Image (cartoon, rainbow, N blue to C red; front, top):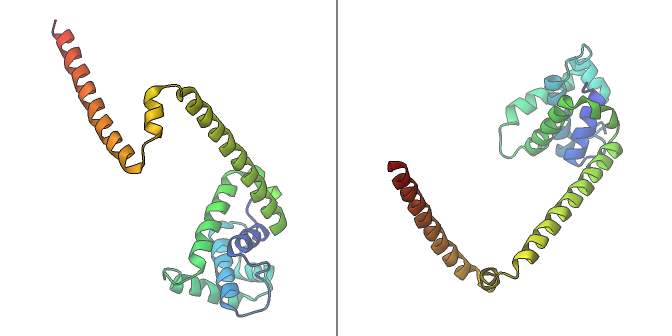
Length: 187
């Protein structure tokens, strides 16, 4: 279940603000809190998701929450609204977490969330290295092929031209195969 604490951690991570409950009127904090209010109203279905409870979780009253929600609705569609990207990323992450509820307990703080993303980065890096090594192995196996050797010596323009010519060649070959199979079917 998504909690206000998890929403706050996700918004802080994607907005780059260490603590959205800090008492300040700086635009980036106000925008991040507006995103937090909107996400809480949208995603938290528990009884204590009232504007009073949402505001209390970040040290503000219900009137401030209502104002933040209005701000989000009025300015949210604007291209200048810096929180649009924060909202989009946070919403996607929280929806993903909602669907994969086993991961929710791991997201208790910004530090935990950053560690999670660091781990994901390491996994993706490892996966990309495996794919690169697989491709290099395939390329090494193909490097004995004379055609491949010649293709590797071409510059970008020559390679594009060769690709176009090979595409035409393969289309003609496919057409010939289809005509041949049609003739076989006729007999």
